[in-house]
Structures are given as structure tokens and as C-alpha cells.
Image 1 (cartoon, rainbow, N blue to C red):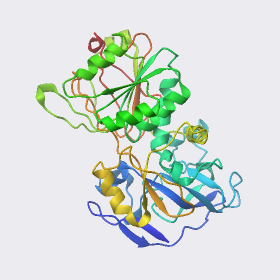
Image 2 (cartoon, one colour; image 1 turned 90 degrees about the vertical axis):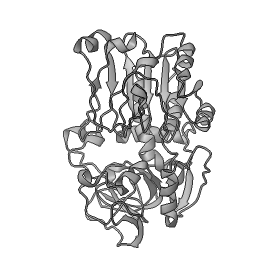
Image 3 (cartoon, one colour; image 1 turned 60 degrees about the horizontal axis):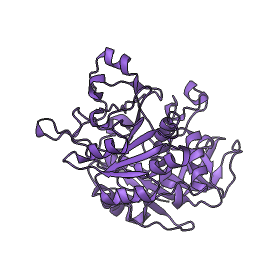
Length: 405
């Protein structure tokens, strides 16, 4: 079969031939790939950022956002049949550890991550497990939903956390309307009655956000005017929840620009933590159930991807376009039958909120922040995200109360 492999870090991917995967366990499922999402994580892999963490032997096939048709299955698989259209949860999980028994698939103690530490979906076929496949509604095709397997799942997981705390009349500020953000907008409007304000530096991204249901959109400018706009929209009170989907951060302290790295720390006085009861919640991908719920929204037409589509043989162009920020909300999407395609998600937004007084920390994954007592003052919010190996879904961080005055 054809595969697209990482043959060396800091060099282009390579189209190769490889043996087709085989059933070796009763719960194995082999999927004929119909579409594989191109994620910025794939670029990071090529750049060697995952070399030490994944500890994978080269060459190997990347691609962790996958959908297609069941090609073969083990004797113990009862939830899907050969020929079924399916989307794949990113991880192959054991089902036996404590995390799995709580439904917290992403923290499985014995998981495999196709496209990250084993061969992934930039290929004609991929082996996964029965616990990872979700049968698609007849109205959906693999090309419609493949990138929802990670980008959509991560956005849904974050938004659902905020939605559980939001009530009609509350305000949610969403920062970034790119690859994850444009999905987050749709999810929030589908599952919550809160008023949604979206901030982005890209006018096209804001136009798309408005089309997708955002109640208000605000252009993020270096002059800081967006802060006043948000405060005016909320009557000077701020928001009950902020969801950050940004890929990079800048800081305007001493007129310098800082691109942070995930896992950095912030120093917050304990008394301010207690007195404000403000929670910062980390977010790492999502569960099988999250993805199943997202597929219901997709089948209902409430969540749609805006994608550019490339043939498998055009893998390098897909990577290059995403890296160069050429994949935006105006890219076209199309439906196909069983053609091998790759989907390139919208480039993640590079919203710059450079007038926040405190340092903003970079992250691979979005986070949710909400205040259980008073509204957050958008002008003075600082963020904490964690992408360490074991980020607990209930991770709660804190914020300095003086920032909110």
C-alpha cells in the first residue's frame, strides 16, 4: 500500500510502499482510509519536536486524524461491520486501566497513538481497535469529518467544560477562530445559550465566525482597542468564561515579543487564588464519548468543517500550505467516494492580544477558564495551559486577584 512517511527529521516526507496491516488480535479493526487530517502537530513531528517524547523508530507513517471504511476486523469486534463508515478516536486504548474505566480515554495507561508513536493514517490502510471506531451516520462521509477526530474533538472537549458552567445570559469570550476555534464556535452555539464573543486578528476568520453563529466578533489589534470593545459589549463586566484556541502568544512588556513554550509556570499568590475562586482548566484532546457526541452534532448539520482537500500524492503541498498559513476559512471542501484524500484543517489562529499585562503562555491545546463568583476582566487575564504527559482533566490552576481590578 502507499504510505507517507517521516524518513528523517527536518526533511520532507516521503511517499513509499509498505505492507498492509494485518489482524493480530480479536479486537483489531483495519480501516481503509478515506481522509486524514493534516494537523500542525504533523509539522512539529517533522521538525523533530516529538522525537524524544514519542521515541518512535524511523521511518514511520504520520496522520492522527482519520476516517474511512472498515476493511477487516477481528473475531471479537461486534460494534462495526466490514464496509461501515467510521471515524477513529485518535488513541487505541486498553479499556482496563482506571482512566479507561472512567471513560477518560486520552489518559489510558497502555494506549497507542497512531500517527504519533505508531504508524498513522497518511496511508491507504490503518490498524486500530474496536474501542476507537465510531460508526458514522449515513449522511456523513469520511472527508466531511476526518479532521474532527482531533481538532474537533479537542474543541468539543474544551467547549463542553465551559458550557457546563454557563447559563443563558452569561458571556463566553473565545480567542481564536482558526482550525480549532471555528469548530468551537459551532459547538458552543449548539450546546449553550451563552452569548459568544470571538476575538481574532484575521478579518476572514472573524467573518467565518460570524457566519457560524458568533453573537459578536472583535478584531484583535496591537493598539489594544479590542479590550474596550469586549468590555463595552459586556457592560464593563467581562465574561463568565474564556476559551483560548490560540497557537502562539506575544507579550507587550518592555515592547518585546515572546513566543512561549508549553509547560511554563506562573506564580500566583495563594491568597488571591482563594479569594477569587477562579479556575483555569487544562484541556487534552477528548474522550470517545466526546467524539461520539460531536458526530451527532455533525450529522445534525450543527458542526461543519471548512477544509482544503489534497490527494495523498500531494502530501507535501498540504504540509507546506498549512505551514505557510495558506489554509483558511475560504478554502473549499468536496465530497468523494473511496478516493484517497488528505484534509488540511484551517491553520490555527495566531490571535495576538498583546495588551494583556501579564505573560501569555503558549500551548498545543486550548484551555477553559471561568470564574465561579465574579466575571473575568478580559483586560487583565493571564492563562495557564499544560501539555505535560499526564494532564489530568480536572487540572485547576489559578489567577492573581489583583489582575482583575
